[in-house]
Amino acid sequence: MKSQRLTVGVLGGMGPEATVDFMAEVLAATPANEDQDHLRMLVDQNPQLLSRQLALAGKGGSPGPQLAAMARGLEKGGADFLVMPCNTAHAYQADIVAATTIPLVSIIDETVAECSGAEQVGLLATVGCFDAGVYQSAFAAAGQTLIMPTAAELEEFTRLVAAIKLGKQGEDIANAMATLANALVGRGAQVVVAGCTEIPLVLDASMLAVPLISSTAVLARSTVALALGERPLG
Amino acid sequence: MKSQRLTVGVLGGMGPEATVDFMAEVLAATPANEDQDHLRMLVDQNPQLLSRQLALAGKGGSPGPQLAAMARGLEKGGADFLVMPCNTAHAYQADIVAATTIPLVSIIDETVAECSGAEQVGLLATVGCFDAGVYQSAFAAAGQTLIMPTAAELEEFTRLVAAIKLGKQGEDIANAMATLANALVGRGAQVVVAGCTEIPLVLDASMLAVPLISSTAVLARSTVALALGERPLG
Image (cartoon, rainbow over the protein chains, first blue to last red):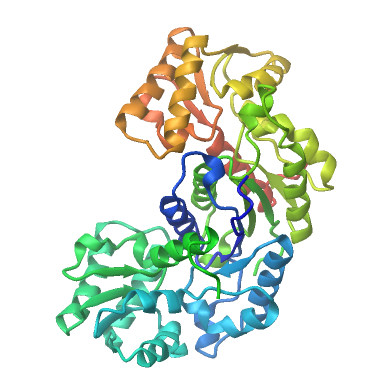
């Protein structure tokens, strides 16, 4: 038991398969020769959270109080810091931060930092994520230009994410997602951000002509670096 | 939010990849049209638990007190019942049961029940799992004959599990695992139990001439049935 390691609290279930994918990415990013080298993670896999999309569209209650309760539970259980492998839910970051004394490592901030070399950044994200503006403000603060989907492309993206959540993750869905990403490249994107954790379930870097920044993989690498003490927290 | 559903507590991390595999099996076994149809699971992914193999060989301290603390934490967090996607760790089932008031659904009992049609059952499991005798007593009570690996086969199995835990999950490891399973079939096994949750990370049912009973998949299906109330608890 390596006691200097931090325990990770995971606000999960949004969606549930993306959380499983995130956990697998954390394992892949951890240098390990045996079980005991891996990180302890307390995971609240709560897919029953109120819909973020409905709430952000003004059509449903806020999941903020539920996220706050989940965060408090993870802190009580022994988590040293929190991560949430869902971009859209970061619209409710303030509820989480107010509810606990441990830091939330933002998938938005980590992903934006990963794009520092690019002047023009393509972003695929949900309608709710765009409406909340979490990425727009972060990239604007960094002085980078965002290249976003058109309304028609965003409608297509919504359809694809719904299909992925139903387990439809075949070549047709992957190719349709690549088409959306490559449209951003055609309009000048030097990198494309997979700013929704469902995207990497179908889209692979090899399908794009520019680098694909998976927010899931970025958060996983940051999680490992912070838990191992390779990077200071906060 | 479907409040009639039970919350699952997962004693995880033994090994960590097997827990991720279990979570994916639960998702696959859950009928769902949207995120909210999936189960809430509180997962304590704790790979830093003391080695079960060393403890059962009399060469290390018992992980029982750590498992008891994890179980208490999951109960406090709101779990209605516990599962542990690791066969060997069920040697410490008594520590877990004594520590909480919620039931532990045994991967051993669920897997044995799944084999009810077979008179002769082949079993692949770790040295520690065999030493603890958890499967032997359950199958004896059910009146079924166990066909176990030879000492040499068990040594080979130990080597394969260590490789799988290091991420070596290619065709050579899969074929070597199939050879071990098929040796049990050659000695009369009518089904083969993958009685270690690392096995399904490489071995597929299509590689055997008889049915392969994955303890991971069996526990996942039981978890879903119990959480959805399709089967009563305890």
